[in-house]
Structure formats: structure tokens, C-alpha cells
Length: 233
Image (tube, rainbow, N blue to C red; front, side, top):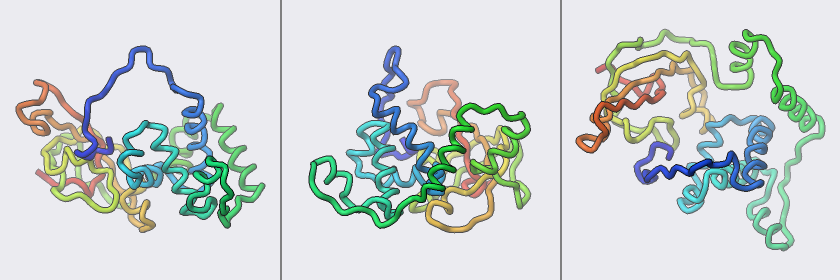
């Protein structure tokens, strides 16, 4: 999980697994699509908040990880006071956050999400405009360095404190198989830095290059990687 070696482990497949195991998981899923736009944050900011959780919380369950991240984001934004949620659950009096969301902003966010939940937009609007307005897609401001077919190697270092570069491909050779356009660069945006939009590529790796002799024969792994993660091979 998170591409980090300390979180490696077996993947448990559950037969006929439900979408949500408990009602609270569905509520957390819904909270995500309301809270992040309300706070003016994107999914990478949420991922960074998850990464900072204690190991036992991070590994507890998928939606528990989301919930812990949202609580921390609300504390950082001063909508919640530190310890406020735990105190309320325990029935103790608690301090409250200093910030409040205006009714107008709440209504606007709710209306926007409601309209997106049942889209009837033209294909060009849904495919070209909305990803730039609501997502991380951005116009490319620099020429791309790589093209499909180019052999590359993932840089040997990993940026701190946050990156989307998985540890298991670090320093490994691969081949570019697709160019996905340019997007906001998450390594910078989550720590409040400004950066040019970066080209994003799909890179194919031979499993033997990643896992050695233990790899399943004939297996290929494809990973989406930002341009600054890559070097010419």
C-alpha cells in the first residue's frame, strides 16, 4: 500500500465482497466527495494526510484510513479542535474549532456535487473541461521528454515528505507505453509549493526486474509515473 516496502503484504480476496462492509464505510465514502472540494483540497492532499497516520491506523482498514485523514485535515484547517472528536465520542466536553463554513459555501458545494452525481453533460465537456475544472488535469507548459517506446529508468531517490513514486520501482528499468498528458504535480502541491504541471506516463516493467527470481514468469507491471521521476536509460 502506498508503494512502500513496510506496507507490503498478501492481498486477501474476499468471495462476493460487498461494496461496503458496514454502513459507516459508505458514509465515509460520501464524506470524501463533499469534504475535499469544501476544503479546496484534492485527493493527493488526502493521500498525504493518510501517509502521516500512525501505522496501526493506516493498516487497520481502508475506510478507517480515510476517516483518520479527514479528521486530521479538519483539525489542520481549524474546523475541529485537537481531540474534539475523541472527546465527543467519550461524552466529554470538548473545545471546538475556530473556523466555520458559510451557509452559502455549503449550499454551493452540495449543489455542485448533486449535479455531478447524475451527469448528462456532452462528451467534450465531461472529457475535456471538467477534468481541468474539478480534477488535476492541466495544459502542458513544457514539451515532453519521453514518448511511447522509450526506455527509461526510475530515479534512484525518493522525494520527501510525499511522492507518488512507488518504492518498488525506484531505480528500476522500464519502457514508456503511453503518455497521459500533464497534471498538477502532487509532490509539490501537498506541501504548498508551486510547480509546473508535469507530464504523466505509463511505464511497463518486467516483473523479473522488480522482484528478481521470485517473480511470476512472463508478468508485466504497469505504473503511471511523473516525468521528474524518470531518466533516460
